[in-house]
Image (cartoon, rainbow, N blue to C red; front, side, top):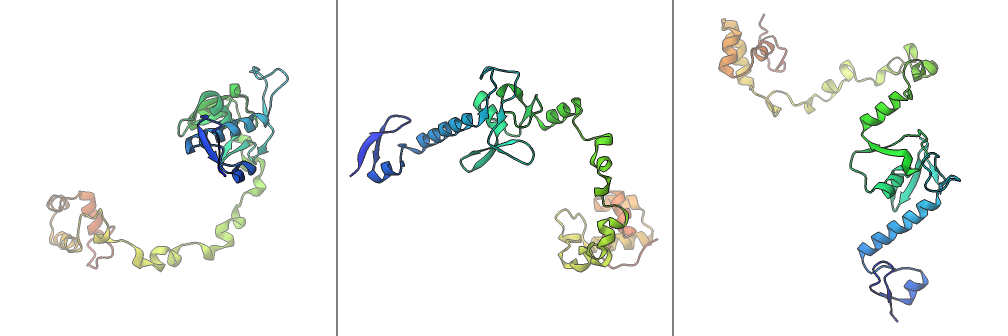
Length: 244
């Protein structure tokens, strides 16, 4: 028999069955209330996974280390429904509101596992790079991977092109040779300004002595294009006598 209860968000009338009550389901009267409830539950779960220093939640100098999952990059992971968020990003959202699209949440303390909202700030990718550069945290110069681990570089006979040359798409193995029918040439291209007939006419007129500027003006293309057509730098697939 249905039981009339209250929605735990808006306190409206909610009809629940005994099975719902037994399984602790159907606690919200609408999708909007359910979304609010899930966010409140996520916020409460987030607060239990951060380690606040002994100075309390008003401390701005100490780092609050994330006690949940830590990724391979050192940043904390927090699951909000089916989404995996950066713990420091969610900490910023709780303190300052939704994140603008394309913005980075950067650390002023340079501790990736820190979720103290006083230690994160909003910036762009360029701001993040400039901040790391100003703190000398970029792997440049002698700290670059090619200097610190030169044995990892594939050079000389260890290079991929030397070890497996038969897998390289070069020469007869190139896609233009093995699958020439897939190429869009000449009039098949959307940006083509000439046709095969006009190309033959240009080459024939050039043999007869007509100047390239005159041909360019007559055909409505640049002189550089006329030169490329005459010397077969363009429209190579159109058979004709090569002009010199």
